[in-house]
Length: 633
Image (cartoon, rainbow, N blue to C red; front, side, top):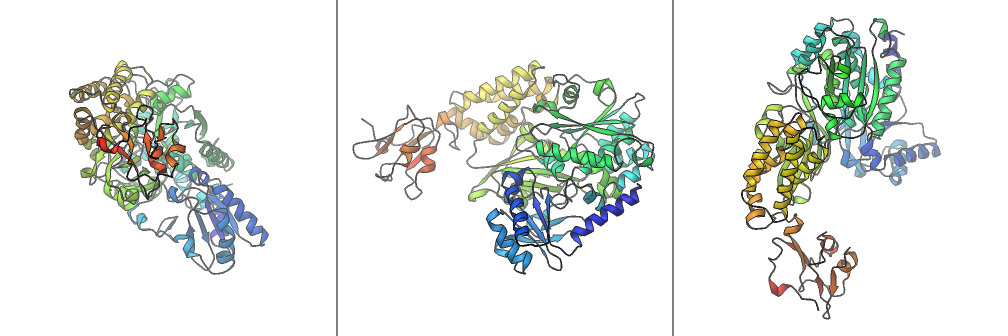
């Protein structure tokens, strides 16, 4: 079958959905949707449509980025407008079927909004102000196409770039990628075209192409969503990369904790092979290339390129010294190109629309867009794709909706556990490789965690350093021992045992670890500590000098008390919920917390009725006036 015949068949399949006479129901069933209950919603729609004998198509799609509003359902009705419904439950389905699909009442009280097609883009997005600040390239199909139907991808321009590439000289493809300014989206930001060129010029065979889908950063899920929502764009990018460098075999290294991404990627590979877009003699060009999935065990250090290659080889995931670089001696000692999921996904767009188009988006040294996972204390958690150069303020407030519960913004952790914590005064920092590095953070793979006034920055630094220390492979003594020493110091500070000279000692240790570590994990692990000291030094000093945690987080520096004048004598909520039985009732009926028993879990404060608000949390723990504390016994 020629590609023209493949396209014709794909467009016929696509037109039957979006240009047919039957209503079309899109239900987001990526991991976020499933976690929120999307599969029962799918079942409910199928049952209700069958019960009412309604002719409509139900399609499972990926995620459009509004993860906090899942399950999302978009109803596309012929000769009417499309409507997006949020937080859909099976109980809502009969109403939606009867009111809108069968009749003309769109149930706008249940809707997130109507849906529009973006000019020049194959994408349906709800008409929300947040999307005005996005620039969706990699996510253009997410939540719009069926990720396990290759026809949907092809009908929206998929694989035309591969056809174009197979008619080009490999060197010309590399030059186009270089001209575009594309930099790796895995975190380091190395120029993609330069990497491909170095590998292509290495006169050794065989060569390999590897996709890094390990994604081990806490709070990051961009690669997972891309693979669950539109996997074919990654496959097409890998095939083009292989043709450009002269590789015949590729691997997708993906963490085993992503079962749905693995399932959908497996189906996508099988469908690409069936259409001769992958495998032997692709589209009759004489070029052969195939891709194998390798499941990882979840080690964070495996995200480092050489450690990842060792894992594919069946060895322990430990980085190796360089040179030689992987482009000269990578997997099994052969020339290898390794890029991130998102990096490969950009390649088809660059070839189809041109390097000048891509380089016209973003900043001078950071071209294109970036996909971020918005997590933490934000109103709108989920995914966002923005042009490079978009400010942190736009990302957090215009797209993320700001901080939940009218709390005050305090800091943002960007770049994963090896990133940096930036304060409010840095909110106008452009999101690009160079600006974030100057601020003390890194782009990383795209994780963004927003924090409010209830977050302790010393405790936050300890959390991320603890993660990096546990995930260290142990090969470098500076990383293995240095991060442990830093962690011990942070634990002392948060427990009230810190010394003022510990701050300078942390900085000294951090610089030594950065200079002496073999891989990026060690070189960037101190970033959360360095940035919190740089921007929140007063919190370190409060913990050390005043033995006080300003955010009331560090357990050793806080205590819970019950105010007698506010406590309702007949209420037993706090007594019943206390896991260590630290709360007792005096003869006068007043509740008292035994500080020696209290585990400081905060359950008593959580269950205290808001009309009483009798449980208080204080730091330092001995700061409550004596007259407020009822002695038991």
